[in-house]
Structures are given as structure tokens and as C-alpha cells.
Length: 390
View 1: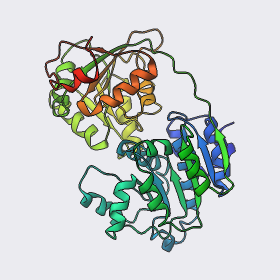
View 2: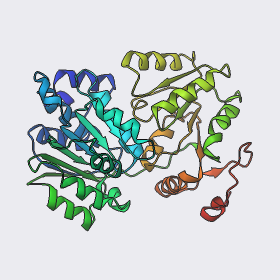
View 3: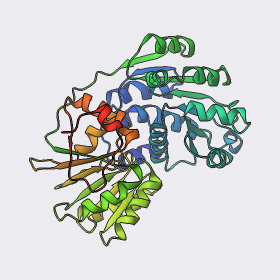
């Protein structure tokens, strides 16, 4: 089966093809057709199974039918709730990527930054809003968010929302939405609390459960540097001075950071390019071509922008930010060490990222070796409390 068989419109198919996606995943095959019909949906699937596209593509397609009516887009019509800032950003980038040939605006709001930035986002009147529950509720109570026209709701990673104590905020948001709407709930696991939400929210849903593919232990040298967040760029520049770092893919969490890090690398006379969701397709392809042709030694990317990248003879992957989802780490480091060649994956870990590190080590059933020769060591005692050095 190919994406065209799922009833997807040409403008979306074009964006999908440009990401070099050929065959839909099981969750996409199971979700897209009923979602296009307006059915409620329950998906049990882990990150890395293609679930974001499974709900983003149908939402974009349904909203595209209203493009002829300008008045249809004066309110938020699709709301996606995500448990973390990182996931919200990634989902937003996915909507932007798939919807690049549609006149549909997407906004992302989350905690941890000044509300003024998100008020500006809301003033642009996004048709699709991706949000963490707490920040959305704050802005709603201040009168900046109108949820009266929401027609489609997505709860992504519902089990993580419950783990993080967000259930009260989620229920409060649900009470403010129109009763008549299409609902989609995705969760890696289905504990009792999630099932309670399912029975409360979903009406006669189509249910799909995707079995997880066993994670193979990567045959790649993995190295860890404990470093304070402000010192990460200095550590990266220090490592890039080594001649063995021939071709380096650097992963960062945000689009803004990708540009900032790439600029810092270029200032050291090391050719670098950045790719992320704010770059158009031609800019991404040009940057990737520079990197593949060795005209740029370093490529700085966000997770979403780096999907589909296949580079021969990639010597190093550097996780400048530890991914909050453990499976993403496996996907990242798998870009190096291909075709029997050796590869090295280096990760920078701050105090705040130690829980993410533990989840990664648990997933791959191995500790990552700590590099002792570190010019920017993290000295806090939390390291000793959480983990023994190697």
C-alpha cells in the first residue's frame, strides 16, 4: 500500500513525497481512512511508529476543504494536546511540513517561556493549535484563547500526561470544548486512568494497536559528556577541532537553537548548515546537498527536519540535547555506523536531562560510557546521586 491509496489529496501527497516517505506505517494505514471519515480514533502506539502523521494528515486534509471560506478560519478548529514542550514543538513542525502547500496556519504554545510570545502566536489566528495543557489553560483563563469552534481534538501520549500529573488540566480543557467534535487519543500504554479518559471522550472509536518492534542494540560507539547547558556550545566547538570529526550531524531541540549553533560553528571557520521546520524545502535540500558533498562539515538539525536523511560515511552524530523520548535517541544515532563502517554517537547531558538519559539506557539495556577527558565538566553532586561514573 502507498499513501495515495489512503485517499490523501495531491498537495499533501507532494509534501509527503518530498520527505522521502514511501510506504505508510501500520498506524497510518489504520488511522488515516477512518479519521478522514470523521470517526473517533483510539491508537495504542509508541513514538517512532508514525503516529504524528497519522493524525496530522487527516486534520490538514479536512481543514483544507474549508479554504474557500475565509470566515471558517477565524477560530481554532483543531486542538492537539501534548505532554511536553519538546513533543509540542515536534508536532508543530510536522504540521508545518505536511501542510506546506496549504493555506493553513499552525500555532504552538507551551510552558517555560514568557506568555507574551504565545499571545503573539494566538493573535495570528492559527487554525491548528498544539499546546501543553497547563499553558493553554493559563492563556484561556486570561481570555487569549477561544476554544468555542474546535472541531477536532487530539490527546497525544495520554499516558505521559497522566504520569506528569496533567489529568486535572486536561479535564478542565475538555469541559471548555464544544461537545460535538471529532476525538483522537494516542497512548503508548493503556492503564486504567487512560481507559477512563477513553470512555469519557471517545464515541464508538476505531481502535488500532501497533506492536512495538524490538529495539536492536546499535553497533555504534557511544560516549557521554556531562555538561552544564550554557557550556554545550563551547564543548561542541572544542570537539569539532578534532580532525577525526569528518562529517557531523548535530541534533538540537529547537529551530532557534539550530540556527544559533550553526552560526557559532561558522564563526570558527568550520562550514556548517542548519535545517529545521522554518526552512523551506529548497533550503533544506540545498543544505543537505552541501553536507553530502562535504562542502559543509557539520549539519545542525531538529528531529523533524532530519527525518528521511540518509548520509553515507557519517562519522559522528552529536546529541547536543538529549531527546525526551528514548526511541528518538535510537533513530538519531542510527544515522552513523552504516554499511559496516564505524560510527560514533556523542551525547551532552545536563542535570535536567538525566531522567531522559536513564530512559535511553533502560531502553537499550546498556550504560553509555562517560568521557573523563571533559574540558567543561558538570560538577554538581546530582551526578553521583543518580549514576556511577565509568
